[in-house]
Length: 238
Image (cartoon, rainbow, N blue to C red; front, side, top):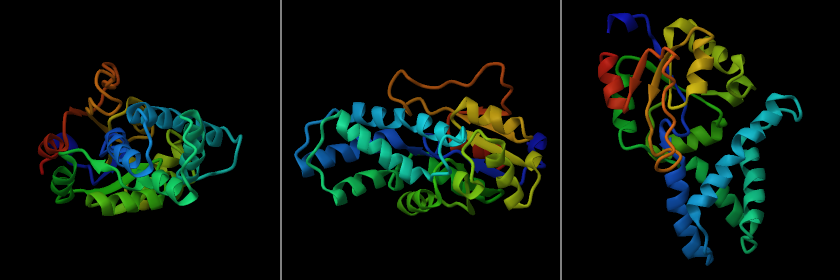
């Protein structure tokens, strides 16, 4: 614990680290299927939708298109996936409801209790590519006890751009070295560590479906590698 005594804030990736985007889309997809009379492989649908996530943000990062928040990118990607799956029967209100599933993502089983423990000692903030409305909606849906909603929209930059990380530390009033980035993704932790953040990798073996887990890079030197937020809390003295 002494090695983390200077940590004042924990910043969190959210999609996949705190919440189960794939499982939620599959679960809600079954509901959409019954409501709208759709016969769809919802796991494939979720994967296809998520597969357009990084390429859409890359066009913003590169300057190919101006700053565009994730709700808009998700909707553009959804329109393309609906066409790909030959889903033509949904009205505008229905499509908007489907798109807002990202505001209703379910937490991993350990997330809420673990965050509550961590909050007794540290400031907790999102550091997500999701825009503020997504993060607020998700927090209200899942009971996520954030102290601050930070990340891409607040910074005007998508991770892994430096501004996304550095602005979060600045807005929390702490040095980067006093922040620990918590994520289930190597790229996020490696990028944040380059700017002075401490790092905690949380294994989420089912994020992308069975047998598709992202594992921590052996040579990345992450400060903590853990399987759940309860263990993370214990290792950080909570």
